[in-house]
Image (cartoon, rainbow, N blue to C red; front, side, top):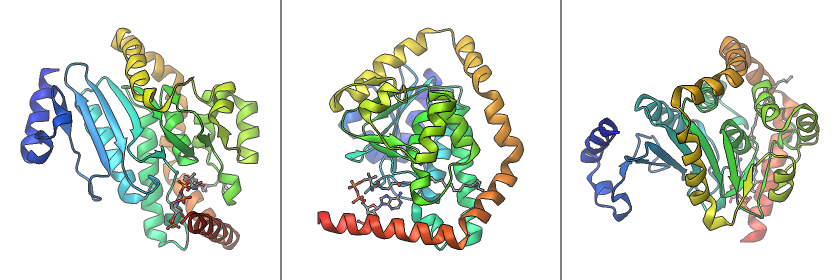
Amino acid sequence: MATLWTRGIQVCRALPRLCTAPSVQRRTSVRLMSTEKDNLLVDVDSKTGVATMQMNRPPVNSLNLEFLTSISIALEKLENEKCRGLILTSDVPKIFCAGLDILEMYQPDVERLQVFWRSLQDVWLRLYGSKMATIAAINGHSPAGGCLLATCCDYRIMAPNYTIGLNETQLGIVAPFWFRDTMCGVIGHRETEHALTLGIMYSTEEALNIKLVDKVVPQDKVIPAAQEKMKQYLKIPEVARQLSKDLMRRETVEKLRLRREDDVAAFKNFAVRESVQKSLGMYLEMLKKKSQQKK
Ligand SMILES: CC/C=C\C/C=C\C/C=C\CCC/C=C/C(=O)SCCNC(=O)CCNC(=O)[C@H](O)C(C)(C)COP(=O)(O)OP(=O)(O)OC[C@H]1O[C@@H](n2cnc3c(N)ncnc32)[C@H](O)[C@@H]1OP(=O)(O)O
């Protein structure tokens, strides 16, 4: 991984503050370009070629356009750098990712809404279709789009006492076909139908039971366990591992690739419906009330 190391140093030269951070010893730390400051922390271990991507957009890592764009650019960069593995996790306490930023969908600017949806498609295409071995270290709640990110990965390790699931119907919205297909690939048709129609948020233990997550470990062991599991993936001859993954996922990836603009139009037309806007408004209100009660 010499090339990676050299390139990493070049990036660090442009960002000297990072290079002096103690946590980057024997590591190449790459802070990727982003429109929102420091919302994505990406460390690449120069010895193993494994990147750790920490989402850091408080309070809940909700995915707005800028954040999705940062993630997409980072994924592209890691793929171009021929990183071998990716651990996706969160730097926000108790939250892996709260899914799409509902404010992007509520009373939207229609042009931005479509760009927003394309940026989510980009992230999905890059993560689900990645050549890297990918592991989600789920160290917090993971509803909807958060669950999507986790299910895009090859393996999921989760800490206890959190929730994960595609809860879209609870907001009066619908998980599109590529969310469904990703979930189906992990837990199968029947459980996905059950999960999607009811918008089920599973506890960590329930998620383990239905194999939505592969392993449960204490909070402080989630990232070490992901690093350990990654070693198993990296022992497999690269081309064989990548082609096997591609064989499993290509059809699903191609389906969206071929229908991207139809999917954008379907999303836009759905999101602007009066009934959908009303549901989103009520859900936001409920979240606000709940948040105020805590304060
Ligand atoms: C015919 C049709 C066919 C096809 C359809 C075509 C297209 C499909 C159409 C639509 C598809 C859309 C797919 C959508 C995917 C999504 O991801 S939607 C987002 C779903 N997410 C959620 O439901 C999560 C909601 N949040 C929570 O449950 C909790 O916040 C939490 C468990 C994540 C964390 O709990 P707490 O730590 O207690 O934090 P608070 O609840 O107090 O929240 C703090 C703060 O953050 C705000 N917030 C939370 N989540 C979001 C969010 N997702 N977006 C924006 N903002 C969020 C919350 O309101 C608080 O704000 P303040 O009140 O403090 O300002």
